[in-house]
Length: 328
Ligand SMILES: CC(C)(COP(=O)(O)OP(=O)(O)OC[C@H]1O[C@@H](n2cnc3c(N)ncnc32)[C@H](O)[C@@H]1OP(=O)(O)O)[C@@H](O)C(=O)NCCC(=O)NCCS
Image (cartoon, rainbow, N blue to C red; front, top):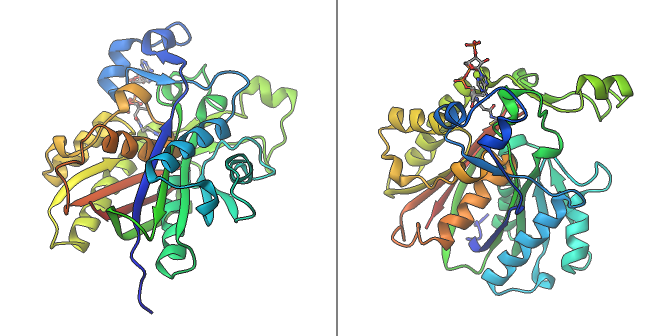
């Protein structure tokens, strides 16, 4: 079967206005701006205001992506949202987005792949686009991690922030042809990052709330090693799959500056090929890559990369990891 070409037609992103700085965090837990900056590269992160939801960020990001694509919502054929912090477990947040955008009765669903959520969702979208089923697919990666972050745990609360990024993939496009996606999983790492209570395994009770068992737990050091290795493999994998193209840019998961630098060293990859905004937003999980992509496009970072290879990659809870190879 011939594969239908498709690419990126428009992007958008949305972050809350409320800022939580390293100094603010040092009022909550025993930490300092110096420690957080040195160990992670993060200076501040955005926090979703009370009364707002993940879908508010998604809808804002999606509208910006539609504007950039010069499209109406009625032209979309499918919506996929990558998130582990939906508005509610039932119903899918993607359905709320579909209604608010005014898309009609197109399919809309959520996917949970941790920080790899946007890459997984893009890979699924690619199947529908590449086989000719759909022409225009909205993929969003979004998170309100502050809602499940334990602000008594200094090893994790310093890392996370909130935000959403949206991409419209279309068979009518000028830039950003999708060349291929790779996605992976390893359930042996199921307990490396988790939220214990609030689903079928453990109900939320007063004891659970006291113990903060409804909040996110990460084994940071284990994630660290996994992340460096996977980032190297993912970028190398895309580079090897497209030897005819010069590697022009990488939009990586904004996980930790040291992880990113270490992977670049192993790959002998100049750090200035990477688009980085971790300093401003921290790790926004599934929101991380599409927010960075949108900022990379709008800031002109990709302007001189036409015809070159753009790699996006992420890794996270599951464990999951994956990459997208794009001809810019
Ligand atoms: C979490 C992370 C920043 C910790 O950095 P690290 O260099 O690995 O630090 P360590 O965990 O080895 O801790 C070093 C020391 O700093 C302390 N420490 C941890 N968090 C601290 C904080 N916020 N402020 C000050 N000290 C802190 C530890 O208690 C430890 O002290 P000890 O040596 O007396 O035991 C890093 O491991 C990381 O970024 N991991 C991956 C992030 C992640 O999981 N992302 C989500 C999924 S993609």
